[in-house]
Figure (cartoon, rainbow, N blue to C red):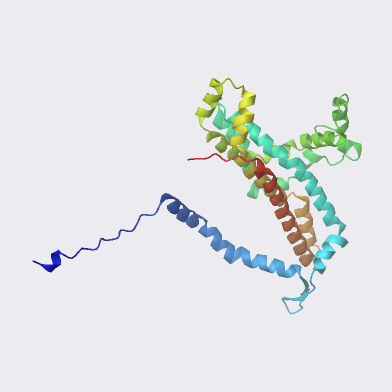
Length: 320
């Protein structure tokens, strides 16, 4: 009897194919690889130089180049305590943020709900609301920013004092007269006036948020709405019990996006002030670096606070 017949053949181990999740993760890394390479080669050296400048004093040498002298936190102290314009710009930017972010998020949600309905010309209306996003970016945005005629039409070049206050869509006296018989505080009245007078800017900046909300609304199963109709729920109850919880993750995403967009916009008062300090003098190069990093830390703190507050109310649907 052949001895080889009694020997057991070891089974060949087959390599398990990669799961769908691992394939998606690998594809995601390939997708972001150009950004990672560009960040390491281009942006990271700039970031390191900016941090270095913020802790040093810059001296331009006559034979070319520059020399750095370490001064510690002196530039940060000068920016906070000696330059009152920086703190004033920060406070003004924060006030504008409180007005813009809620208005942009809720207005974009309102428009997305309307455009999600079955109406004639729905695709055309979606394109119309997204056109301002295209027109306010890149070269077109720079041309628009230098349009003296448009600036004159929006702000007026001769209005001063009371005339300038009444040049908006609403003024404070109109809203006070409207709410004279209601128990409404002065702060709420001013907030409404500022929000309405900023409607042009709000509509221009809600295009991306509207598309994100639309994607969230379209991901809700129609069977859920059919169940609500069978149970006799009204449209108002369906919105609060179904639509709003289902799009709450999109509210978190859009709020973070709107905060970052508001803080980094070219028209932001803080950004404008930092740029003016940078180009103003030789000392302004290091002072502006310190201002930029303080501004960056403030943005991170605000985003962390926004995430911490809104994430408590976010509903994530289980997909078992």
